[in-house]
Length: 378
Image (tube, rainbow, N blue to C red; front, top):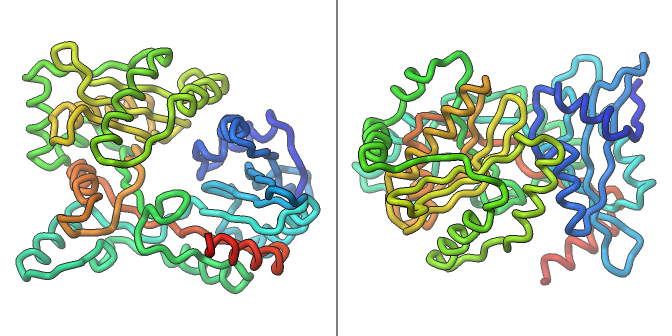
């Protein structure tokens, strides 16, 4: 039998640091950041009969205005043994539901860190070429046969559905809280020469071109985040989209750096002393995320290629197994506003990974239904 308890920060940190599915959303520092925007949180641990912590999660709570009721969100979690032969999913979740109900939670959302399908860069590139050759329009990555299908993860989806979890069906990757399709480069057991050689030849030329043209990539001081934000805001203005204000990034740097001085880094690419590309990276042991990035003009500047190569080199030097470029759209339409981003990432010879998706559970069904109706009418 499993028992669910509230665990202290140190105990939870020790657990998450050693879990194979660890990610920065499930670290205490992410709760510290979200607390600045009225989210409360707690760390929970699943204990076995011997008192050993065998599962854990960082739960975020948001109070509904005017009611003593809460929404709960478990970003990229929970960190449990999803494929356990000893415990069923009901064993893990039913005690979680009881706990959340005691916390006046009426609805909980999860987006587990489980990959169900993968498409290689070569498969995507060849598929796009075939679609173009035959004049086929409105095609998506999901129209291509995946290189890998994880049936055990599909079984998890089935189990969640039968338990009463409701999956949010989205038309594209960015229609959920976290992108459902991400682009990842596998660095495990590869030398840097092997990694570079796998890049598309044009990407290799772009990297070399940037070096020939005198582009210099450096890791900047976290106190200089205003420079990064100015470039981010400029790009957002060019693309007529909103961007987060500088306060968000200042607090992100502050909270994440307190947990680990190497948790967050900002990379700057300069040419002739002018900032032309920048990226904010977050790292936990084993994995790096290219979380926010911007460039000077909406052009295919070689500096952005060299900047990513420098980030990949640093990740490799630290022994990380994955470089995560974050979200991509699944549209293969060249006119789609996210197509160039997909094209840029695909050249780095990684994989598009489809995650298990976003799921909601009605802890208190009537309140969940009423809130859902309210949100749809907004």
